[in-house]
Length: 169
Image (cartoon, rainbow, N blue to C red; front, side, top):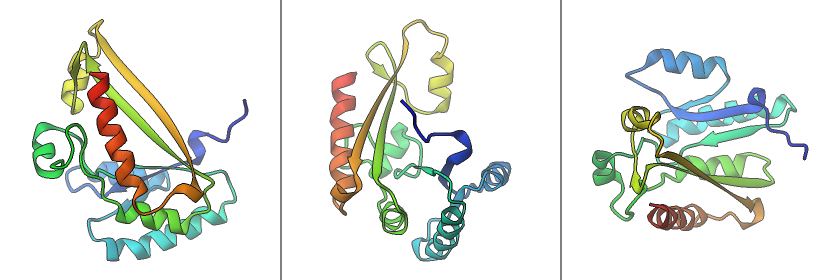
């Protein structure tokens, strides 16, 4: 089946890294949207970037990580109070993207890294176990028509993700 997914049409939305300035340069080079933690400030950057993306008239795929940070026991304690396996999504930028883009669908991608029945979290934990024969990556893709997306959608989606991880480990 023909699809429009092409690495040249992939854009990410990432927070500006204070620890890795080279990462910011690379993401900028690939025309990604770099944001801060200040939603009001990011609205102007988003409007400018969306206009640029729209003017290319190319198929566009945007990757957004609404959690904002990588899951770990420490980040879960701080950002995951209402969930067992995921961090609470930050919906502001997601809502702005949905309102500002001409999407037909939103794809929610679930990725679980595990070793037997134990969830792996964080880069080091995953990389350390990649060569283990019991290392598994489980991926699910959920497609939702844009007309079904509302302000509560992301929260119900995170409840579904949280439950799926529990059932998968």
